[in-house]
Length: 296
Image 1 (cartoon, helix red, strand yellow):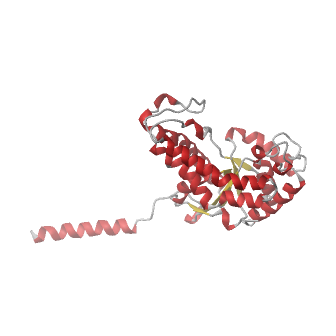
Image 2 (tube, one colour):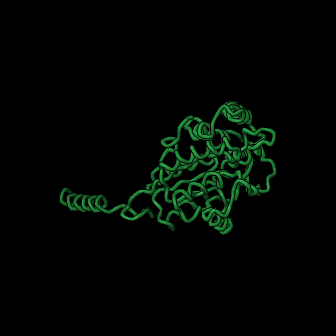
Image 3 (cartoon, rainbow, N blue to C red):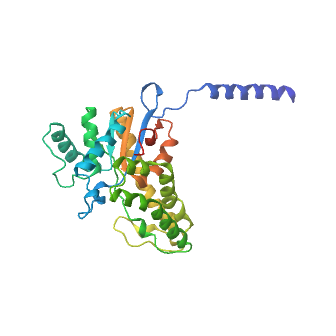
């Protein structure tokens, strides 16, 4: 019996040795296995913050423009070689055309329709300062309101968490609206881990506790396969599905461009989810945006 076991044991140890020395599978990263840096910059949709009767909310005002220059200077220290934005890839030709004009000083984004957008107030100026040839569109369809989850067992948990979240960020936004907080201060707050984590928990964790209900009708949501018992989890899956597609757009764009330092400018709701995805992707290294942002 001993004579039989020894050859088997030797064979097994040889298999372990071969396995241990085998090189890791390719992750599709940049040359020589180096990791790609990625910064996920959480931003509000600046055009949606604008209130006609409140000049402090207008990012086109002289004061806010000066503050945006200061904020962009902070982000420039990261020195990205690719900038990606929350715009659908189908819009790439239009964005390419506008950005080409902008680089030639033939486009004034402050006078164009939609010029308050973070794409034109952040991505375009940053790209031009860095000498980048293109701003990349990496968004995906599927945007929907968090209010479509409106009924079911334990729905009060979700409603209370929503109220708590609003109570957390509303005073900061109101402070900005009064002019007591700068653009840098607002954006630093929105990129802080307490804000991102609370928002991520609200959208991607708490709803799983809601069961036996329905979602409000929404043109962006196919309710055909939604199971009422798992209504909260189904709600999460709608949002997470979009994030996975955005992740796919980011990584495939990075592979095509061979960029090594990516900056993605995107709504805060996506950041916690994308951070979770990228943190387990060995081809990437997450760079906290707060390493570059100042509170004032």
